[in-house]
Length: 460
Image (cartoon, rainbow, N blue to C red; front, side, top):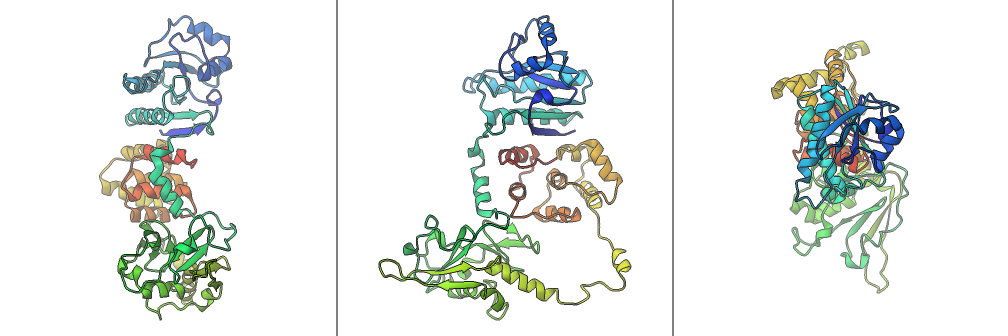
């Protein structure tokens, strides 16, 4: 069964056992300890007095009394003293001891607080990493539903320094949902017109601005690094900020054009004309797209020429418009490959999600159990998927299996497509998962930590 990180009050979680981050006396205290004693009633304190305390890293069991659980498991976490005195080992022992005690009591579900992360001063990001790793190790060999309950999500700022590279990818890639107002001028904080070449073009798209340089010779070494071009889909021309990604429209890999093409006058002219940058001039004429844009060339205060400002006049960017025109041309009324009646077309169904999943499990040479445990998936849910050829999973579940099977980005997109989904630049969740898969990182708990840090749903 999976590990779920949730935000809430642990005293209200309905499960077989609630774990209390206690002090060594077991006689109550502040924080989680005090809240559990208050919710359970005085009977809990009376039983704790008979236990004779508890040592750091160990666990003891009592009844739950008025709590929505059968048992309370008390464990004593380490006080943080810089990390040089065995704190990590003691903290991991807390989780192992509590889980083994729950197993002996035949518990099927357990709820943990983030042990030692409160008054004991253990850094929250380190406490979370220790918790997820310890629980994950236990779940490799045991079936149990484990909740890790974070009480105050707004105050729980996981060390964002751990995710600086991921944050930069999100900043470069994420496109907010439609409806944002488009900028009328180049944001001064992004570009200073006086510092740009006078014959450059700036494409304004929402809050972003892309510089399209015009250079006299290919490979101009004097071109500022800020003038690097965005990525374009070589199949359909879709524009994309950031590093190599896949096209959310046609599914092709998106790569930056060669440096020679980027720095050439032909490339700049292609962008200005509203066609795919690396395509010949006759490849994709777009008079309709260009009609949606206005140009202006103004003088700076000192009289010097300023760059072209291409302002967005509709809900289409240049390359979005190119994509739309190309799509309309390709979808002109042919039979789209279908022959015969609708019933004939429906009779030719592709491989389903369940079928592809089971095929990939066999190809990887792993067992069903290993697969659903790596995916942080419940055994009962996996049985449903295996038993129903047309099962429609949640997107989080489909991606969890992609991670468990260590699928390539192309295979991941195919598996998602079988379930009726796709990855989108307008979803931070999608960008985060794609970030890890594209870098060959398939640790589902590490990915879930990042998703939790950015307040996104978890893979499960």
